[in-house]
Image 1 (cartoon, protein in one colour):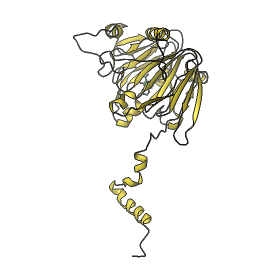
Image 2 (cartoon, protein in one colour):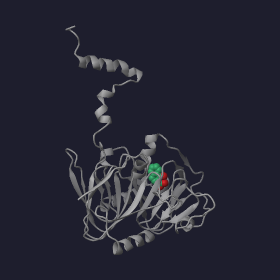
Image 3 (cartoon, protein in one colour):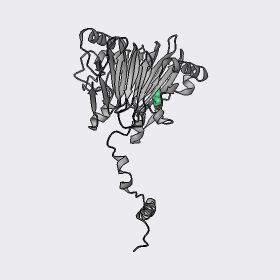
Image 4 (cartoon, protein in one colour):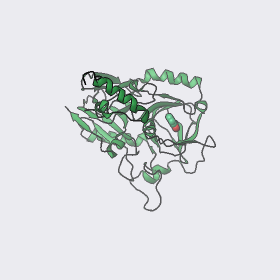
Length: 354
Ligand code: 1HN
């Protein structure tokens, strides 16, 4: 038959007819479904504290923590506009609580981390135990644990929130509940979890708290900084990462949170790292020092950007982008990523290069 319609038109007509049945041809999308290298929508980004801080302060004047429920400015990745993501799998935001305020009790399937960025004297209550927040403290809200925040001190307090919100949404597995009162009952003395689980000891008998999450829900910076000081003085920095230590669940030896990897990284003054890349996108909160973070995408058409960072700045390094760090002064970074989930799935790839 010479007057046959060209195959393209015939194919298109076929696809059109099968569409109502929920059928679609794989061969039209195969390359996009299975890319040769990670197809990364996340972009490198830098939030400077001196630029973010005035907006937090203004939000503090215009809405109360009570009215907002959580007064947070989301760190939204430019590659994920309108999607409340800092990477494809993770959410990040900066939360402000003013003296006298309370952010009411609720709980949800999403796990949260807090990293205290500015100020002191706020508190968070998790599962009946309160902890006072100091700069650099790392605090966990495990999945479905009741939690609220307050500030009984005299100064505004800001912390970084990191949550697995896009991951839970991906699984369509989110649940949440509001507390019947703004504040849950405090049933444990302050310091209980650290005293029970944070001394290199674990109770032989009895149940553990928080399931897959560390039974320690607050890792004070005073202790972490001591470990880093020791490493800076007596250790040898690793070529690509400097001195990198992870927050650990003492009950398992694994990550402190089941869905989010969290670590601290210290670089000696004038130390320049080798490059590293990971399939897990990395979010950084700068704790101390001054450094240049260079992020390079060596895939075709990829670019390189440099961010000069100081305390309270935030940076996101997209998956499979090279990161190198030049520390102008002794620098401490807090980092988080979705590495535990990628590890569990056998997906995590990490490389270093000179
Ligand atoms: C949340 O519960 C907190 O408890 C912060 O402080 C940010 C973002 C989305 C959903 C829940 C908090 C959140 C959140």
